[in-house]
Amino acid sequence: MKTFITIFFFGLLFTMHGQAQNTMKLDFDAAQYTIHKNIYGQFAEHLGRCIYDGIWVGPDSDIPNVNGYRKDVLEALQALDIPVLRWPGGCFADTYHWKEGVGPVEERPAIKNVFWGGTLEDNSFGTHEFLNLCEMLDCDAYISANVGSGSVEEMVDWIQYMTSDDDVPMVNWRRENGRKEPWDVKFVGIGNESWGCGGDMRPEFYADLLRRYSMYARLYGQGKFQRVGCGANSRDYNWTDVVMNRAGRHMDALSLHYYTIATGNWGSKSSATGFDEELYFSGLKNAMFMDELVSKHAAIMDKYDPDKRVPLLVDEWGIWLDVEPGTEPGHLYQQNSMRDALIAAITFDIFHKYSHRVKMANIAQMVNVLQAMILTEGDKMVKTPTYHLFNMYKVHQDALFIPSKITCEDYKMGDESFPAISGTASRDKAGKVHVSLSNLNPDKKTTVEVDVSGVDIEKVNNASLLTASAFNSVNTFNIPEAVKPVGFSDYKLSKGVLSVTLPPHSVVTIEMQ
Ligand code: AHR
Image (cartoon, rainbow, N blue to C red; front, side, top):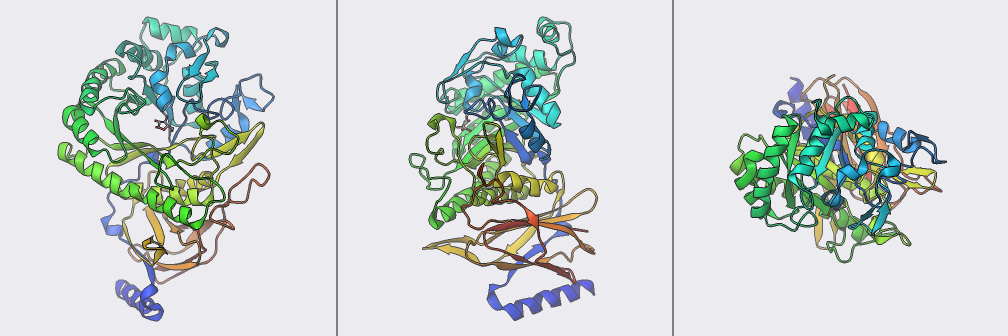
C-alpha cells in the first residue's frame, strides 16, 4: 500500500510539473558496497608551502604551534576526519632520500626541491614529523617510496625503520632518534608517476620493477601494509593493461592520477578567480570525465582481477589552475572557488558509484597547493570552499552506498550540456540516511523530488547548504567566510518523498532517519 501511495504521489508530481521534473530515486534494495572512508583522503607533498609554512613552522616559530605543527591548521584538519594522508610526494617522492630527514634537526642536510621551483628545504620535516602528524590526525599513513632515483635497499631500510620492532640497525637508529614503538604504516606506494617525473619509464619496464620492489616490500613489511603500484596518467589505458597483466599479482592496489583542467589545455590553464561562465561550465564538465576514466580503468582491471582483489586508488585528483599572480610558478599556489567545491562534490558522487573498485582517493593537495583545503599567509589561515565541501560530505565515510537514479534537466552552454543535478546517498551504521545534492546550474534554483520510500524515514535530522553569491566566489584572508555552509530549510518530507529546492550553484547535504 505504501509503495502504491508513493508511486501515485510521484506520478502526480510529474503530471503537475510536466517534463521538467527533477527526480532522484534511491534503490535501497540494491545497496551492496561500503563507501570506503579513504576516498576522503588527502595528499601533502614537499611542494611550495604545503609542508613548510602550511603545516610545519617549527617549534621556535612565532606562529602558534604544537611542537612545530601550526595550531590553526592542525585544528582545522582534525575537524575534517581525514582518513589517510599520502606523503612525501608526488614528483618529490622520487627524489627524496629519507635518511636525510631523520636524526637531530641541526645535522640534517639541506636539499634542493628540483621539481618544484628549486626551493631549498632544510629537511626539518621528515619521517618522524610526518608519522607523528598522522597520529595527531588519527589517520592512516601512506608513504610514497622512491623508485625513480632510489634503490630497493633504501626502501627496505625505510620500511624497517618505520614498521619493525626487531633488534636491527635501522630500528635501533629509530629508537636513538626518539621513537621506541614502530608506527602503523598502512600503504606504501612503489613509485609515483613512474611514466613521468618518477623515472619516465615504459609500462613493461615499470611492471618488472614493481615485481622486484614489491617482493622486498612484502618480505620486510611482513604484510603490514598494502603495496600500491603506480597507475596510469589519466586515459593511458595501455599502462593499466600492461601493469595489471604483468604485475597484477605483485601489488595490493593500483593508483590513477587525473587532474581537471578547465580549459582542457595543460599549456594554458585559467585563473582560479574571476573566471566566466564558460570556464565554470568546462571546469565541471572536465571533472565529470572522472566517471569515464574510472569505469574504463576498472573494466581493464576486471580482465585480470575479476574478484576485485586489487582496488583502484585515485591518489591524485582535483582542479589545476593558474598560480595566484606574483607567486612562484613552481609552488602551485592557487585560489579555490565555489566551482571547485562543486567539482569535489561531483567527484565524490562518482567515486561513491564505483565503491566496488575505488577504495581510496587523495585530493591534491591538503594545504596551499592546487585544490587545497586550507590556505595560509603568515599567521593567517583560511578554509576554502573545498574544505567546507569535504566537511559536509564526511558523513558518507564508511557508510553503505545507496544506488540512485537521477532524472533531471540539462544545464546547457552553447552546443554542450550535462545533467544539472548531481547527487549521492548513503546509509550509515546507525541507520541514518544522508543525501547530498548539487545544483550545477548557476542561473536558476531547482527543485528535486527524492524518492526515499524504500525505507521508513520519519524525519529530517538536519540539513546544510553550501553556496555563494557567485560561482567564482572565493574565501580570502580579508573575507574568509564568503563561502561557508549554513543551515538549510528549503525542503519538505512527505509520504516517502523529500522535496528539496536547491539555489543556483549549490550543494546540500540532508540527514534523515
Ligand atoms: O600534485 C602535483 C604533482 O602532480 C605531483 O607532484 C605529481 O605526482 C603530479 O604530476
